[in-house]
Image (cartoon, rainbow, N blue to C red; front, side, top):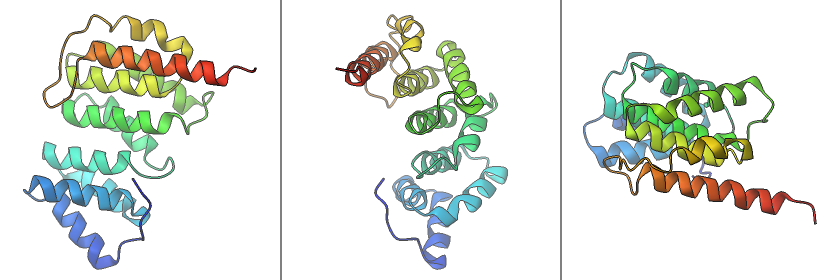
Length: 187
């Protein structure tokens, strides 16, 4: 997401209304606007408390995933860990965690908790959750995760609406970690 000016109260109210609406395109566009609007975090969090529709919860998770900084970290981790959430919402939360893992200090409890949860989710019944968990673990750039990712190289599930199999995503994640390790080596 590119940084854009903070939305006016009127623009924010409209985007919050659209993210809860029935028009899928408008919902995605609203999520993009809200992702770039720091003051909307509390409204998005409040919407999650009472909104039950999967499409809206997914759009809110999308908006939270693309926010600058780590303000959404704990909320995304909670969504990801909640087995009552739909696989699409949990998958989006995993993707968001992946975007933030590179900004989170590796030794912190939050980082470690997310990595443990993502490793456990490699065996989730949902291919969406497995795929996004593989993506997030690859984004961590942690070489120690390669063995767990290698075990997914035989997972041929292709989540509906996604491009490629879980195995292909695992291969890509392993390659990304290995490339990062090569770049990080002292010369």
